[in-house]
Length: 210
Image 1 (cartoon, rainbow, N blue to C red):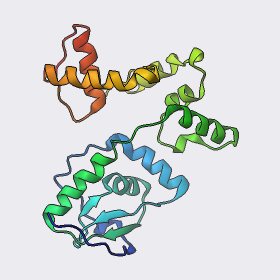
Image 2 (image 1 turned 30 degrees about the horizontal axis):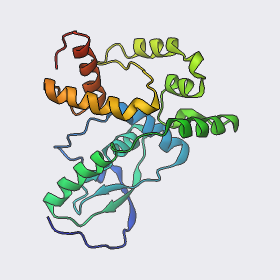
Image 3 (image 1 turned 135 degrees about the vertical axis):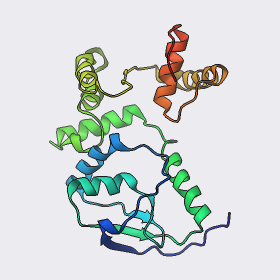
């Protein structure tokens, strides 16, 4: 794999229909399309789609789907001049590196409270309504009933979200222990939340189909 040369990137606006999705894209993104569409509608299309010289999408499939859902005709695009194997590697790296960051919850809560006090609409941030309420609420008033409503609304999905809170001082230890347990039990899935759910079920002695 060759080392990429640094060059200035040129943004161009092209017809949405000209873009071709990567047929082997291993990333599932349907659950993110609506939040991204809301963000684009509110703030504009501020992150270009990355594609190759033939306009095949390398990174930005969710933005492409969101633009289609919004009925957009043109979108900002950056064409990358990469070898085919580099395109594939970059597409995977671009998605995977985005998973490595985590939230500093106290700072996130502080920022959300500031935005909330300024009457900003928080529904465009990508969090569900229940998640926003939970982040804004004091710990003693954690709104479990809102998550119940959210779970009921997602009844057709194969998995459900169970919100939990851990002492921050124990977070790294719990993550490490869960990862070791998953490896020991052969629990594998590209979705970390599903792995965590299977680890919890295994620890409780509840069988599950992976």
